[in-house]
Image (tube, rainbow, N blue to C red; front, side, top):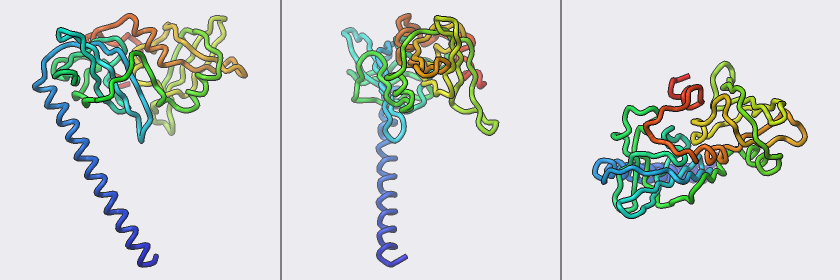
Length: 250
């Protein structure tokens, strides 16, 4: 390696170290401000009315909150890929707020199944109502666009393994309207849908026009359909659901 290459390499390492430190400081400040608001903000309950997920060096999630104080207000809280299980469309959550800035209130929800471990992070981006998720695997997004939509009922599901270790993916067997079974193979179930995946539940699917035994669940549509029933952050997850298994450590 020449002297110039060594100098350039050293300079790049210095720049990268500087960027890492700057990111950590900004990251810490944002979460620090959220934790401060969670301690001092006014208490209230909000309804989750929107979830937006995007891929950007990982998964970014903005969750829309709506509440009255006493006039209607809306704000948003930021998460990465791992969202608390109490965060599901049209369910309530406990919040702390100041103006239109809001974060979750972990202290108020402590002890509840799926409660948040921290307040999240304040977000200036407030998503629209509903679920908008383009962070899904590109193959999943392609299936949702090209395969044939219909409805089915979940028969069973099983977490997949690689080299004997559990993965984040699931094999899900569904029964179609004509009685035939199809498999949703090795699919990552997003956090906002895990509450609703249990045997006997009707789900929106798309079916491979070239192979009727292959299907894909439309996770955003599933969350919107089941979100119509609302819910409370105090509610336990449905028995036998992926959420219940996750909370039980299985």
